[in-house]
Amino acid sequence: MHAIIRQGDGKYYVSAVFGYFRHIDSTGCGKEHLRQFNRPHWIVWDEKKERLIRWLAMVPNTEYLIPQILIVDSDHSGWNTNEEGEGCVGFLTRTLLDSFLDEERQPQEILDLCRQMDAGYAYAEIQEIRTQKNIEDLEWASGGFHDARIIKEELLEDGTLYVRFDGTWGCEIEVWFSGDVEYDTSSRNPEDYDPYWLGSTVLMQDGFVYLVDEEDMTVDRIETGYCWFKARHMRYRVIPD
Image 1 (cartoon, rainbow, N blue to C red):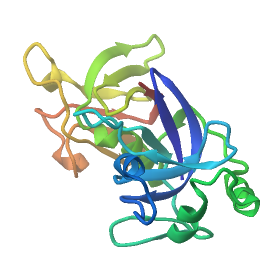
Image 2: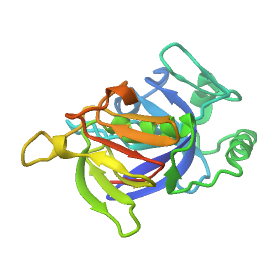
Image 3: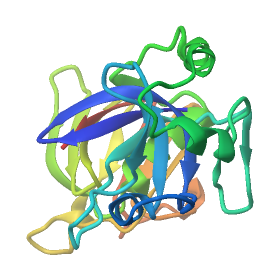
């Protein structure tokens, strides 16, 4: 698993993700420590990839839900998780992590294992939907396009349709549709209708990729009243806020 770590004001870095927990072990923790981390958080590299840190899932001290981490590679094979989705990579445990995360020196053998796991990964800003795994990655990064709206729609000279979304939590998303492009965005025209999406479906069928503004859609159900896109190819880029 890998993620964009949002630092605010458009600043970010990409890190492997080693764990996810909803609460910390309160044993021996001060009040401020508990206040900051007694909520969902991820275990990731610091910006210099020198040590592991806890990173809150949401920006603290605000009434809004603003993600601080955008999962761009959702593969968490090899993780040990409970029924609530909490857990970490196989060579770590909750107890082990809590024993050293706040220490000045972290175990070198653990850091070496983390680097081995991270070796060879190169983040590509532009991704193409080719497999179900690609669809799952976009679902994670976009939050299912919940609260998204189209702010730019442009048919390029080569027939590619460029679409830009904002409103997605923590980022904007650019999408390019190419090859036998068809689409209908009239139902999300802000001059006549609510432009905000509640959810989405990305699916592949008969050599085409579809993006529709509704959850759990099938191709045969796409009709007037939906905002939808169809093309041979779909590429996207996540732009952190």
